[in-house]
Length: 419
Length: 120
Image 1 (cartoon, rainbow over the protein chains, first blue to last red):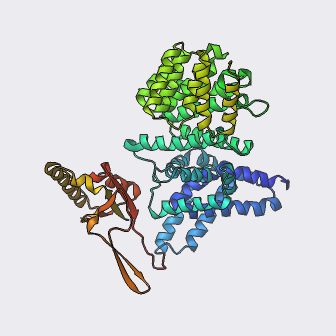
Image 2 (cartoon, rainbow over the protein chains, first blue to last red):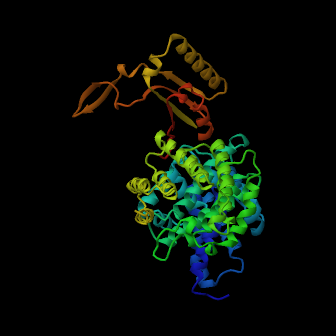
Image 3 (cartoon, rainbow over the protein chains, first blue to last red):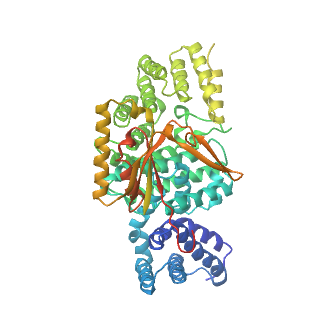
């Protein structure tokens, strides 16, 4: 056992990997996010103080779990919250019981329910979406407040306040620490998956910021989706979301050109896709489509899978994609889905019908501020050889687009139009 | 745990209703209230007179200053409240969602502050 310079890095990695599973039972046992967090901090601080001196223990995870258990018991004994000795002994016994299984069993199975409770509470619909994201990253993923602030380009103090505020609301409004009952699980799970999708998307839509940090958000989104898919093996939508993230993330390298410019799907070098990730995602897509009728993430993943399966852009099965969007528009109607459906109809061969649908959508005004509507129209007009109309549509799209990378792409496309 | 459920709705909607419609809404409130009394959640509840009857009071430099009307002009007005005892926010939300006004207005759910012996 030797003191290595990377002890700190190992502790940091352990923190990231195990934070969620260690804190989840503590929140239940101590009845409070803030108190549980202090216990986890104490345990890791003890590791930081002892491991560099005494060496990394043979079983680092077991060591941390034991330290957390002991710190929790200390805290109960020192607390004035317990009415009498009996209440205190009961609380101590509950902590001992919760941490009694072997570390392996504990980290694998025994904490399953607590971890699910944690995810559902962090993504409770009574919390603001940005607060849900911050709390999930901090508590389930073990990101530090500074890391989260950096990822969202916010001042760390602002982020710290946001996290304190949300923890206070959970305690003061008594947001329960539980897995929703079967009759409400569907709606609550949808809210959880939406939060995870936002985490991933924040990393993927490279709107600003350090590329590395942004990618970390994608990785955390994937990790969370993987976790929820494992914790709720009978549900199809977590698998759909995980597959969608894997298939989207697989294109990450191919999506940016040498000068940082956006490369659209049609023009991507498909050999640069992450084919291992695609291979992992495809069976998940099939599993997620088992629900009748299929649900929103499963359908989006199925579309992404059809793109992934096409060796060349020209091989894309647009007919099938249009059919999937038609189902999507029925089970989860939205103007954005209608727009995607219209594009698929056009790409499947009926340009005029696709354009007609986009114009009808535009006339309804449902996507009035959405730059991708004129951008899609511009692209279809270009394919139809109506260059003057396409130019006007690109102008409309440029007037609405805010993302610099997308703006450069639209301007480039506009310039490339024949006169 | 006590929660105050504050019912905000557009007063005009209620005034513009036909007598039959108003009767139906009152019957719904009656049934709802009876339900939460029976289930043991009800602690208090009242409907308020319209905002036209409201007076806002402030004390400035030791003098009582009164103004006609509510504190804030909004599209929806506080029209009534229930004080309930619920086991957690989820139960409070489920009860709030059963208030007839939740379908046309907004019900704000606020936990009632509990003061420990040692202060907050």
